[in-house]
Amino acid sequence: MSTGEGYLVLAISAVAILALRARRTLTVQPVRYRSSTMRVILLLVAAALLLPDLVPHPVSLLAFGAGAAVGAGLGAYSSRILVMEPRGDRLFYRTNTWIGIGLILLLVVRLVVDQFVGRPGPVEARHVSIAVPADPVGSALWALFIGYWVVFYLLLLRRVRRFETVPASTK
Image 1: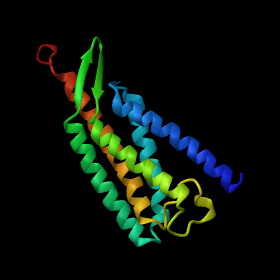
Image 2: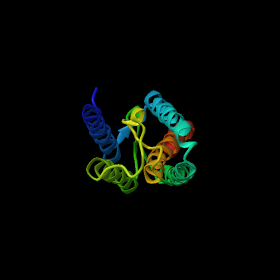
Image 3: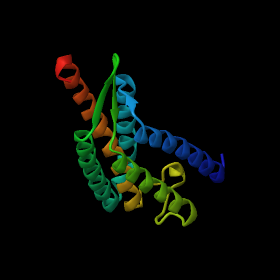
């Protein structure tokens, strides 16, 4: 696969992921334990795959840590203002639209800048798909995205467990 084809696959994947993320951000979603748990696992795997490449770049590693911390804080805040809605025998939730849209826009702007302006630092050929290592801003944004959704989903699942133990008359 050539580099151009790699970027095309990346662009198509990014648009699909962002479209799904936008739908989840703007609409009421049913709580699904299995898919939420899988999302957390996949995001943690993505973070684990990025970290070894960041070790030789201390500024990017620091930016990744800062982005993850800010994302975790936003995820915790967003989960506190989350709206839970029981409908029939299922439980639904609505995320904070503004935080979700802000994260999506940051990621879209970053992808557009990378595509049309170019990457600010050297990138090894095997990192064509994400190309984070030498770029502190990219590292911070990816970590912000990962940190937000990992903390959000973990706290969502914890809140759902508590919500389901409350008697129906007090919900």
